[in-house]
Amino acid sequence: MPATITFYGGLGEIGGNKILLEDKGTKVFLDFGKSFSARSRFYEWTERPRQANGIGDFLALGILPDIKGIYRRDLLQLANIPVEEDKSVNSVILSHAHADHADYVSFLRDDIEIWMGETTNHVIKAIEQEKDSNIEYEITEFKERPIDRKQPPIERRVKTFRTGKKITIDSIEIEPIHVDHSLPGCYGFVIRASSGTLVYSGDLRMHGTRPDLTTDFVNKAREAKPDMMLCEGTRINDTTSSNENSVYETCFKFAKQANDRDLFVFADYSYKDIDRFQTFYKLAKNSNRKILVTPKTARYLARLAENDPELAKVVPKPDDEFIGIYKHRAKSGSYADKDYDQYDLESFKQSNVWTYKDVQASKSKVIVALGAYHLQELIDLNPGNGIYMHSSSEPFNEEGEVDEARTNNWIERFGMVKVHAHCSGHASSVDLNYILDQIKPKLIIPIHTEHPEFFRTFRGVEALTLAEPLKPISIL
Ligand SMILES: [Zn+2]
Image (cartoon, rainbow, N blue to C red; front, side, top):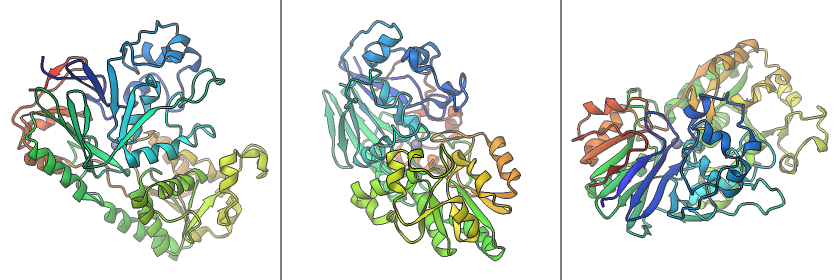
């Protein structure tokens, strides 16, 4: 029996990667992410499936695949679904910490090994530590807590890797190789199974700050002479090229203008994207402003820097002179200590804390980088005139859905002008073509794209299979 792959998500959609690799009875999932498209078919972004029915609503609506034996007992029992423990799924290998690749791990049995890059582990931990405080940056639907709160928190069997380490799971050998993407610690994989070699791209790009990482992956993948490649195609129909520097240049032009005219600046980008944070940090420094972030973002940066020596070199400390923490009004509206959770209170002990009144008094001294999930702060901030620097993708970013029309209403209502400056975490079609021409897989299966058929025109593609969900494909 040859090794096979079966898709439980990630085909014909951007995100939701859940790919089962099976070899001689060993089952390994490549990513186990949230499908925004499946979820948004039934729910608004802010709506949640009923927690009272455990995993039941997710399965009934097809937001999660119905696979026996892999899900948590407590979530199944709550939905009155018989618990069948098929222990043959041993492991999940995560390519990176974006929601559409990692978030639904929280539904899985806790004895399943979760392999991830060391930095991914730090990123997930940094986000997870916030889980009890607020749902806004929640990593998972159910968070990593048992339904019965008297039970201890779920301890996952996390195992980490770096480039150069090879993971052996029975007959499968997995070689992770770093790639550049819009988040630290991302990987692609060369996977050697008993019947053939598979390459999995994860999410990647060539135009970011570290194209050398992706080049390493491409070289390793080419040397492996893969029988099959699962290749992301998020931007298969997009040839535009912009990079982190062009984002900076555009924003700097407008920041200068804002300085000349004493204007407010609001920034909206993915808080997990360290490259983008650095771009805005540099923008703040060079336009003589401070970048104001949420306490959560400040803690995220601090934790990454604490745990990862590589990131510590590039991430400034939260008490840096060009960084400020924005203190929002909560519950009582009067900044009482009881209004905030312990994490926020701790963050507000720093000296560089700004309230909306501080911002009003020094509008042209700050870049308020709270993002689209905190537009309501504009009511307090009352910017008058200003520039809204929109620096993420639409309508789906890698964390969720933001309603563009509604965001625009807020921007307009508060007299701001929107400037769009973004560079994607995903390779353009030109770069995808280059990557495939280099690797030359015998067979390519497009994933993470709404237009798999566009791969047909590419050089380096000998054969293309438009895979179907739940139909195993042999790796030969
Ligand atoms: Zn991603």
